Image 1: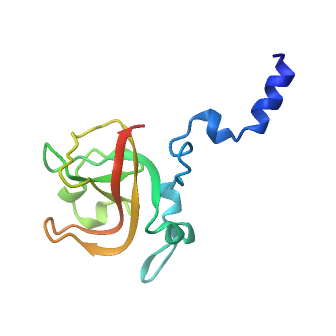
Image 2: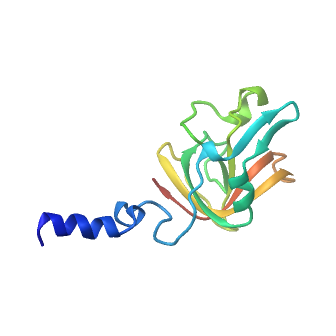
Length: 149
């Protein structure tokens, strides 16, 4: 196959398939941290239209695990960039606004990680307080799969 033919073939294939992007193989939408919120008002942040349209659906997000509270994790906080301190160990004013609570499947635990992670799972939005931990979240991912990015 010559170079021109190869370029034509690659041009006909969606880039997400030959670039190997997470979620592309399964058609799972990819959600970025920058797509979580639309605007900030006096009442706080408003969910973006994309976030609202994906609520209840399976999505893929990439980010970093915030420093955890315990050695084995059945939940963790996903952030867009690595954090040096645990978000629970500082005041709420120091937390980034765009964090996502990731809840592992029942009986599954995860080791803490400083590497980038890709999380695929069901998206849930709305203010929710976890009765066990007391953690209040706006955006949650109920993970099906967590892997190194």
